[in-house]
Structure formats: C-alpha cells, structure tokens
Length: 471
Image 1 (tube, rainbow, N blue to C red):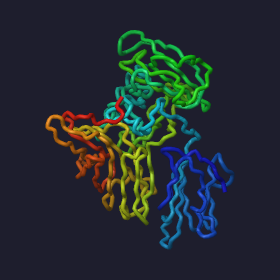
Image 2 (image 1 turned 90 degrees about the horizontal axis):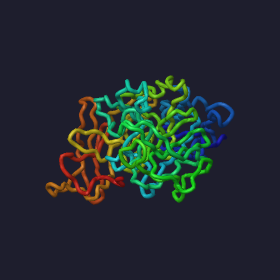
Image 3 (image 1 turned 90 degrees about the vertical axis):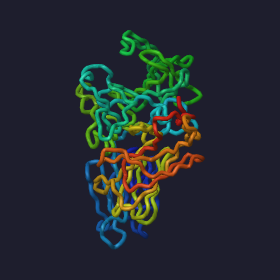
Image 4 (image 1 turned 120 degrees about the vertical axis):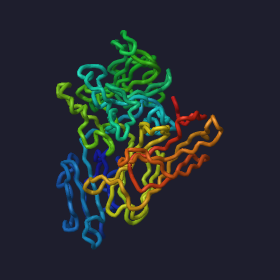
C-alpha cells in the first residue's frame, strides 16, 4: 500500500461514513480501517504520490466509485445487504500541492488561531480582511468596484442576509491585525528577509505622502509575506537574514507608520507571481451572494497580466470542521476553536449527510443585537446537494465567556440568545436558549442548519465588555 501526507488541507478532507474522520497530517491508509476480514476493501493511490490506479478492491462488485469532478473521488462500499452502497462512504478531495505553511504573525499563547482570526467585535484581532472584489486600494480599475467581498463570499451589497462586511473595506490587499503599539511581530513562517526599510506613497487618509516601515520575507515555496506600519525593526535585522516564527526572536514591532489611522499590523501575502492573495482562501458559504462562483479576484486577473491570482488556504490551522453523520450512534461536531459543539442524534437525517461547521470569524449583523459569536452549519448529500432541514432536532452548545456580563443601566443579568438566519423570511429567528452565567455556556435546539449567532440586545451598556483578548 501507499502511505504519505497527501496534501489534503482545509477546506479539503477525507470523510468516512459512518464513524471515521481523516484530518490533515495523519498518514493514510490507517491500518485496519478498511479491511473486511482478510479481504482488502480498497486503498488509495493519489496523484503525485504513488503509482497505479486511484482505487483498488479485491471485490469491485461491492464498491461503487463516482467522480463528480476531476479532483473529487467518492467510494460507496456495500458491507450490509441493502445494496445501497452507503455502508461506508469515502470522499477524497484533491487540491493542488499548495501546502499550508503560515501561522499568525504575533504570539497568541493562551488563545487559539480561530479566536485571534475573528474580528475585533468578537474578541479577535482582525479589523480588516482581504477584499476579493479588487484588492488594490484605489488603483484603477478598482474605482469602478464599490462593493467589498470577503473570503466567505459575502458581498457588501448583499441584503439577504446582510453580510458581516464591517471588517472588510474596498480594495484592501491584506489583513489588518489590531495589536497595540510595540507588539513583537513574528515571521509567519521560516524564510529569508529580502527587504527591511521604508516605503513612501500617497495616503488617501491624510492627502499627503506618508512613509511606512516595512519588512518582506521570501519563503521557499515562492510566497512572500509583508509586514507594514512597523514602529521599528529588530536590532541588526538585514536583508539576507534567515528568520523563523520564533517568539523569542521577533523581526520587528507593530506601530502606526505610513498610511495608518492607528497602531496595527498590515499583513500581506503574495504568490510566486507577485500577486496579492488571501491566505484564508476563497470558500463562499451557501448563504453568500458569491456561493458556488469563481473568486472575483481570479476573474479580474487579466489586469495582472493574466498571472495566477488563486488564493489557497495557507494557514497551518483550520477554521472548518467536517464530518459525516453516523447512523449507528450520536455524532458530535465541534468547531476548531472549541467554541461550539453540535450534537446530531441517530436519525437526524434519513440518508448519509456530510456536515460542515464553519467558524464565524466576522460578526453577523443582527438588527437590534450585538453578535458575540457566530458560526454556520451546512449539510450536503453525497451528490453535494445542500440540505438545511433535518428530521430530528440537534443540540447546540456554545461557550462564550463574558466575564459575568451585566446590563449597567438596570444591574440585571444579561441573557445571551442564540439566533438563526431564516432564509425563507429573510429574518433572524430567536431560538429558545438556556444560559449558564457561571460557565458562560448557552444551549439551544434546532431542526434547521444555517448561520447562527449568539446575541445580546445592543441598546444597553455592558460591563465588563463582552470580548476576549481585546486589543
């Protein structure tokens, strides 16, 4: 058999129905998982790793193989007697050999990648994401594009549902991390410094030329990362220096130099063609205006001389959790940060169902409410048909520490409520929610999947502020 790290990374996955889930970094095949007695069920020989056919079985009459597209293979294995080929389902999604290599460019010990990647309204560090509509600031032809589009596919002109676009602004070519002045900045991955100096240019904020301290790091895979608005550089840092993501050896310190309205780090990624790309990739959600559409930044890449403008997921940590429901037992799906768990009972759906949980990195816009935390659950059949309605209710447990949140005006305990976006009525609908103020946990049930938000009324003043690790 062939073994190896197959380069399957978020949002790609290997899924096995009913009990098994393959995660990136685990060698495959896993011994004993795919044997029926002494008979070999199948093994996988993916492209670029092993020779031979993609799937083999000693009894091909018991396996049904389909290819919905060039990069996706699905095996349905018949191990019972109902001939539905649903007893064991494996889906393999191959993506180009772009292996995630980045981590956040600052030390976040004691927190998680997903928590720090959220917008500042949800306790994270981000106050501006990459704009996929046209990420070149005010450069032509961006002047004709007035909308912003984030990596989840939400468009700022979208009204159904209103998009969480408050941390994406028109033409933004990177990610802004709101970290205080003088915070140590780390190389996001091992590489070599190619530039450490000042860059001047016209600033649309001030109407004059401003100068920023900037560091550029070349990585072995062809990508370049850039670090802008620094207050200073690490002593002795020079072009040619080898750097790594070592908290004890920062490359510089965050600041407010250049075209900046406050201390922050502008983190920018370029591919081997020198084109700015989004390290969060392009993963439009089913309720987004750009769902199932090509990344608009790729669409306009002719303006880059037709250079590749594809955004791959480059982070070593994931924001998407995917699993298949078991028909033998309860299935629990937990977000990558551990902030929410969804419990699916046996019979939650009457056929094999792939469920995807997506961390809500940006604040959901719920009229009259403040979103403390948001997430999405999406279901798909084996033919990738989207499913929202379930046969049985699922249990949603959300953990959001609020520090004993209280309404200052009346001194009463504020009870967060879980809400779901109802696409049929184009409104947010409250779910009956129980709240444990001691543990900071909310619980609700739902017979629908979609986008959820844990909210509090916005018209009161709250102390302490309901955020975590606020910059």
